Length: 287
Ligand code: SF4
Image (cartoon, rainbow, N blue to C red; front, side):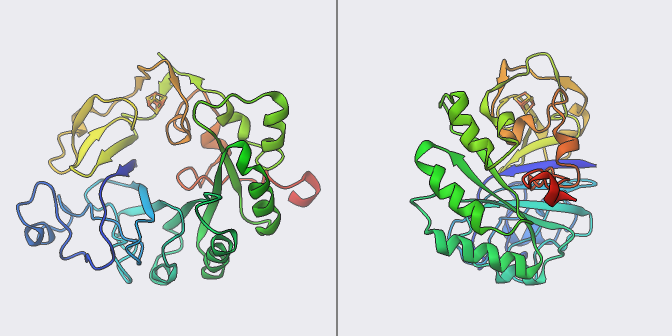
């Protein structure tokens, strides 16, 4: 099983599977005529064309069938894809998910206080819950976001995990961190960069990062190219290898680090960042 982290261009829902363009395939239609090969890594659209969808995390038995949320009816129907997690700020409509395979699709929803109205974001999460779509919600842990995050936590149902990412370059005192841990008990994993040089990481072996041209790297942070997704040239480069960087400070990277227990913490929900146990609830409520 291979996890593919895709970060690249996307197009709105008017782009359909038939017009999705492969970087290696001459014309869009040429790409569409080669199902199961290059060209099935499609542009991602959330249904509104609003620019809401960012990276896609997909787990499949093999690449080349990555996913198809290009519009209603297309979402996550590729048979070789086991799970697709889409990062979004939920400015898109949610109705396109009605046709999605709920076992395969999941969302990672980031709330940006000050950019997105609280009520609108909360309404979208209510829609996702009604649709039966698995999702997590998250906030960047800036001091000015603390009250908004607390309010969101209080108004989300207990079934929804709200994660907090440490803000880049921000130092947290113990008192600062305690405030965020009160919202997300897993915040400590994000609070400080992890020293990873020379230590095991699943990226480059069972996890790869792909950009819009199909260029495969082990992760978003290590520039070395392993090959290309569309011609399978990356396959021979897949093997266990240590991290070459001093630190890893982004969840989408260190979640794959072998020194951390996060594959157990998020078992069954690594890509969409949903813990296996509702660690965000008080102990009595978990039983
Ligand atoms: S630990 Fe982080 S930076 Fe290092 S290889 Fe893994 S994902 Fe990349």
